[in-house]
Length: 157
Image (cartoon, rainbow, N blue to C red; front, side, top):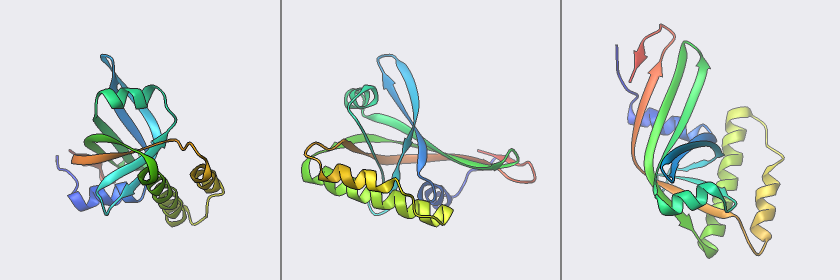
């Protein structure tokens, strides 16, 4: 039987994870890269950061992107969501504010998911103190599709 996840389940998967795969176009080719992210439920957007490079240059030229997050328990039980959205680069004090929100959000997600406070979060905090911070961006969500398979082997789309 083919079915899709309820919208609330899609947002639950976004909220309970912090690693996803960002898809974008560079030239005429698609690229997919893993990124650390935080789902900002208040603004219904995905926050992340990067140093200037290939993906930032690509997203500046082509703002339409996709973002995939999986919740895999076994070969028989998994869920996958695909977010379609638009890239927005944040600047100045707004970028610093959202980098802070991103760092706290990722930390809280890791604590909630794994029950342990990560030690690497101070890396994000130290970046807030530097004169030049990394490129902070968000993806404004336009729509989400999903697919899952449950323990009984029913596949959905």
